[in-house]
Image 1 (spheres, rainbow, N blue to C red):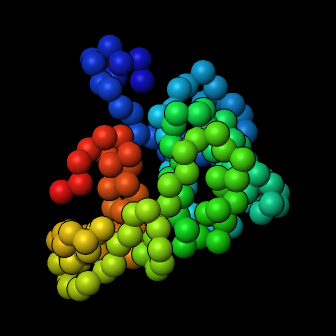
Image 2 (image 1 turned 90 degrees about the horizontal axis):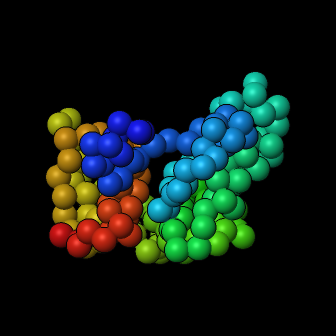
Length: 150
């Protein structure tokens, strides 16, 4: 990250694993925001219980400062839990219901998908619902960081 900063990079997008959060490897970093996409029963070898794993992930959002954003996936049953008690401004995204940022898969073909993201149709050369979720999170993040929706 030092090399990125020295090169004039303004933004760094990174995954903060539950291991890194628990081990405080993100201490000292300043975050403009955070995204919660989903949580599965991975990493239970490290966390021992699913509840402990959820608490570890939630710590990241609990540490976000006022003035930052927390973008959460409402389609994951733990999406709202992650942003409880955060000082960050909470924003939501969903493929299934009402949210600040919404997406619908209009068509699926062998070479990609046609998505409708907040009313705009976008063709992407990717397949899979998880890619639609990831693209919607990227779109929401870009808007929250100041990009104009197009």
